[in-house]
Length: 85
Image (tube, rainbow, N blue to C red; front, side, top):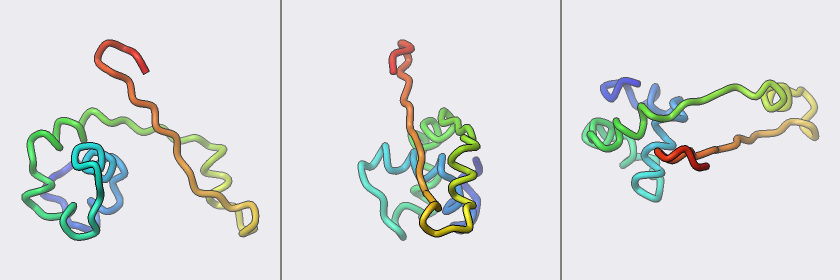
């Protein structure tokens, strides 16, 4: 979680991408990676609060050599400060 990371590194951080999209309500292939954008304090706060967990079922589907069985996906659960989902 380094806001000084290269664009290539940020591009592979689902936590960064998700934080920017949540905050901005959109994603832009250039504007979302600027140094100024990556260092925004409010984004850093969101970014550092995001946790990811591997789902082995999805990983298996992602790596399936059969294109008809290959799958891409994710599940997002947002938990508020009061513990509600």
